[in-house]
Picture 1 (cartoon, rainbow, N blue to C red):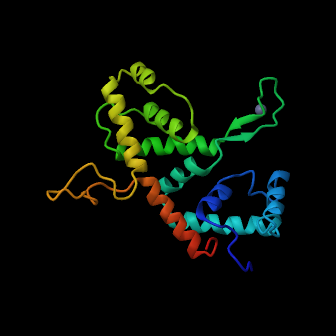
Picture 2: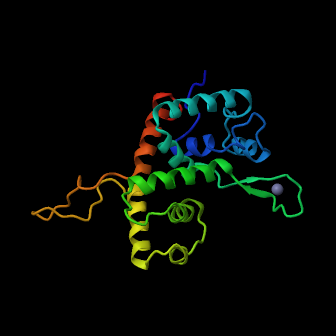
Picture 3: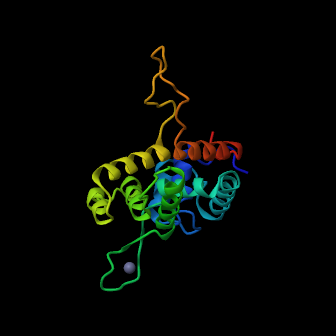
Length: 209
Ligand SMILES: [Zn+2]
């Protein structure tokens, strides 16, 4: 039994749980050093740590939809993992396959759910997500042009997708008659909803305060 929650907050927990290099029993020296720096006994190291991580992950998976899991993977899983393949062309890094799959999954749902309408394209939606989550410098208008999309369509689809995914609570571009913002007019983005669900699961499980 751990006497206090192993994580300080949900962001720390999710960053840990979605990182395959940190949830193994044999953690990299840098992570063990971080435990020392935090002057904690290293609750999350060794076999106990692996068991705690497994039960926290199960708790989240049990309460979130596959789309919500994919969205949180896009945000919190590492984009790249270390690579030891030793081939001549190896840079020492490879794209995290779980992260790349999650981007593809979210892109498919975005096409259907974000009502991107005519001309919605998986490659374009993926590119928007790779920019948002992977910080990749992709020229969306160039890609759009290759796919036969007008500049206006590119702009419109990007905005719809990011609104659907990220729109913060209470944000609205509509106003009521008395000039107050119509706060319930637009739905909360999928990512803040997923994050809140994960945070609740972690709190219920005693993994965060
Ligand atoms: Zn390699």
